Image (cartoon, rainbow, N blue to C red; front, side, top):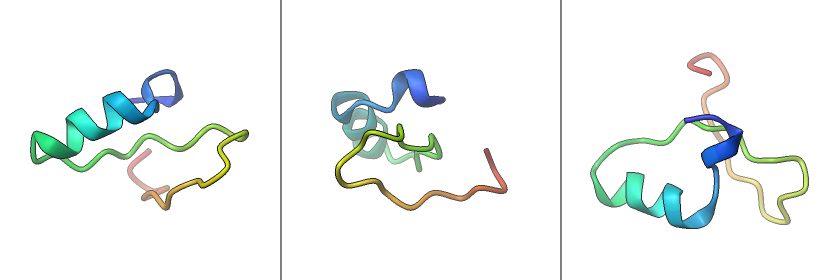
Length: 40
């Protein structure tokens, strides 16, 4: 995933599938999440 796919629906789908999303949040996110910068 990259920032183009960091929307809530896509992120929830990834989490529901048992995967760990590593896409960084867009700069304009009101509540950005933590992510592993080394993986990205």
